Length: 230
Length: 230
DNA sequence: GCATTCTAAACTGTATACAATTGTGAATGC
DNA sequence: GCATTCACAATTGTATACAGTTTAGAATGC
Image (cartoon, rainbow over all chains, first blue to last red; front, side, top):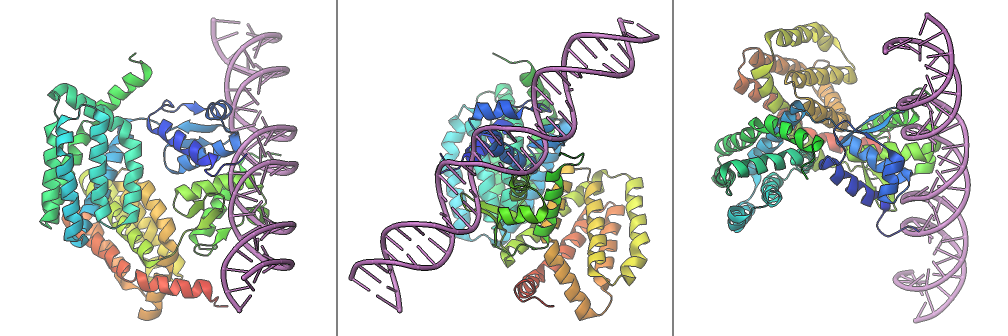
């Protein structure tokens, strides 16, 4: 009954998405039998996937008690933002030093290309996806696979909160969120001018600004998770 | 037949150690049945542990082909050193800002306390353990659990190479390796003076220096792994 | 009522069985 | 000789069974 594409991978991807979206409530205990039925797989591949997610920081595990969703606390989210600063600033510094002009120009093209979408997009999820892509491409310019790995993991764990933050910004400031785009331009300007200090300062300020709004976003997240809107 | 302490945890710890030490050769395919027999557990808990190690970057996985040891290349090791710079420099910066005087003083005490051991210790593994402890405690002063998590993981994956590098330094420069200790003092001085720029510069130079020796250490690692010494 | 003990149900932990896939080496054709 | 095909051995993928542990709720004593 086996397939070309393995079941554990499908299960893993589904669970990762669910964990990122807090489809499991913070600290919620995960019932393996129930979940395996829902995902159409037996407990063996399910547990393999769950173990991966533990190692990635999406879930926790207690002996003889099973798997739990990670907690959602301001401290946790603030730490993730700081980790992003660590990873992205160092990557940017490296990119300034070693990315070649062609690679940098390609990122500049991308930035210009998405600008109209960025201005007009109303769906926060789309905006976030574009933002993540920009940041990821920056880190890729560092040529360091580990830093890229780390950023991907951080992005996945922080996305739920960032999405809330973005929605909140939109609601507060109207349809457009001008700050993000100009911040990206400032970062890119530093990079293309090989001015790592300027680029890093822009990056730090860019992330730090959202970090300052994170505690409030966590509060909203809780109210959404525990008092369904619909 | 279950125990108070789970099997999967024991298996996981053992495998992690083996993977860190390259008890599996780089790129080597891992035979599950054989390994499960060696570890005295069935394939089910073994595979759960293996999956965790994949997520942690110790192993890789290919569909229907199983688990493999990670590659060992200069690029990979150089990337790990750079990731350490990212994590440790940002943590240090944070520590300068938010660690209280008492915590910093405690780290200073630790530094003084191990100084005699550091001077006299001949076993590179001991030296490395002390070095790792210092760096880990520094990161803990940042108060950021994610950065600590990241450093622990990086340390475990880079340890084998660092050990070789340390042995080589000892063989080259005689019994004592004076540079490390004074570098630690310089980093600490920056921290205790709340001079994050100075502390960060010292940290960066400290790690970068070893990074420059990493390629040669990888070469030696290969010769050790593929041409047993005894 | 409230805490405590006991019992059964629910759940997790792991071994095992077997299906599906991959790897290997002999047999075959050129 | 060299590549190709085929069969079977070795290995991985997953379901299932059952042992052991935790949890929840009823029964009991105070």
